[in-house]
Length: 505
Image (tube, rainbow, N blue to C red; front, side):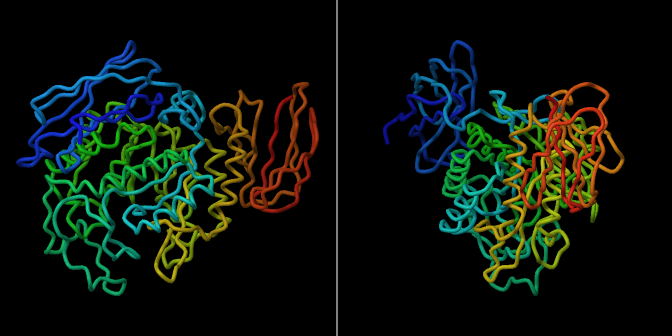
């Protein structure tokens, strides 16, 4: 390759990339440094680069202003210093910049556009065959999900006994030929079987090249990549690589992926199942992320049984798995109050029919939980675990969806985008309803969940008129009831999952 190949024009919040050749002797992943300094009229930022194998080094940068930039790339990777310039143009299409925390505990893109988060989970979809990965992207393109949770490391768990298509490090795995559901043992913190041989100081570039290609595919679909940096479901030893190797890994991830505008960082999935790690260990890892992500993407950590302290200053939003067998989204407004941060319900159980309660709620119950979370001011996330003859479950492998909730989630997405401002904020009204308001109370949704009122009576002391609609959240219909003022009665069909929308005129 030429000594320097780089992007000459890039959109604001898109990814500038410079590729350079450099030294290959020793271990280039840790023996050499590379960094870039980027300067414009309004920005001066230094970012770390990384080694991509075969003598190739890369520096990536996400510009924040529409103007001319100059750059200098240097480090011990080469005896030379490289300079250049490029133009940053205005953003186009679905490029609204990174997602940030906005007003009233809601999420917004950096350009101020509301981000109505509707997530889903495919833990190890990038570890599957290329055909299955493409099928996952096709399914995502046909649905309303705009955030996807997934792991860098492969997963050892039920329905996940085959080896991944690649590994993150150079080395060889233990023999897994006799693993199946009948002799399943959760390794991770319990024990890591012998036979794994990894060099935790030498990454496998092929693994990360595929991963970042999928980040870009999601970006092009307008989907945020909620990257799970660590998890305990492990037979390879990645969950026990040690403090120094974890820090080395996190710095590599920050250098490699942080210039993509659509990334979020999930420090761990079910952090409390890492029984050998303390809160101090997690805080040290969080400092690595904070120090080495120059763009300060959204950051959180996910629980199994016990919530992390989401009030910690490095955490931007709550990433919650319900800890009660029944209650989930019903507690959204309580969590908003407790932590004073946006609440993302990353695991409210999965629609499906497998043996475990976390993976066999109905499409109706999933939809109900989505509406509860939305009206209470939070962000619900989906997952699906229907039995499959080839053990291909969306929650882990991606592929195709089979449930009833995705169509209803698409309908909810339309309602969310019709909501003024950044989203609903919960308020107390009658004791037997859930109410969210926007636009200073001029817009309200009253949700009745599993209850079935035949009518509701409203009373407003002002002289304003109110446009009233009845929303059937399951049958996905909106019925205009007319315009009312003062005290009035709205007839309902006596079915579950109904809502009333009132808009002050």
